[in-house]
Length: 404
Image 1 (cartoon, rainbow, N blue to C red):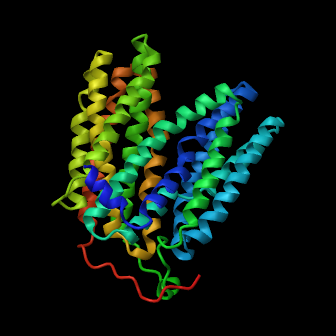
Image 2: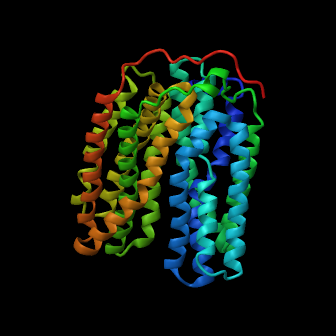
Image 3: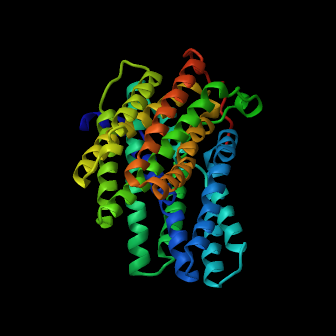
């Protein structure tokens, strides 16, 4: 396993852009929570805090694909640096507005501005891997590595926000997120040799996006995100019913650990099946592994099945990214990957909200039927994406890079 990752990271520049990209996308797991902590502390209202945080999350989902399209058209250096700078400035202004007790909708608008201008760094990093990877095996390992980085981001980020906000100041988590975004993006865009080049042909004539295949895949990713949000809230509710709410974080960490370990293993494997076949298999595995959750009656068994569920998450996501990379033309790669990853993030809140309704009406155990249904829906949508996918063919980029 180590030799497989060593071979991928031995690609010139790969370790540097992968590490800086991981640092730059730390805010995706920190900002929304940081806003909730700051606003609730200053206003005493979680409702107001949720509204400001939602403004950031919704705006980020809305802006994700257009910003990725702009990256494909203008290049990473010309887009990522100014948009991240604007996002960070807007985030600082959110803190200033909240500390000054500015009335609504000022904090909401500033949060929305910060969200809509924060680009999808993960898509940009994966596009770099697609440009520098020597063969398909290296690229599969690279996508697995980035999935593991995502898991680390979502494990470390919220914990760091909570600790800094409690130990230092309520805005400390947001300040740290802003520093991560600024420093990580600056390091990433400074690495010019691994930035996918634009070509004269691509700058004038855009390749058509195979939306008939990509759109169902993005919807399937939305269902995967909804499953994640649903399982998270259902688990918190289950531990509360058992009188052990403090263990919710431990159980969710076990779940994330299973996904992280599976991602590491997948990156070390050589696949004979296509990404579409792997995605369908991963979706089916998710259905099978979440199906026992409504029948679990103890925290120990819940932890066991959540660990098993985690084993299916990273492989499914890695296959989705690989499948997207194989579908879309090189001059629209950021846009294609962003469509899938944005769908994943956008699905979390609806899944969590739906589970909340079921918990109030029928209890925590029954609420696990929501992720079961969502997983089944993901299989159906993923199957339609496979049927609509064009046959694999050569992906040609026109010669003649545009001078910087």
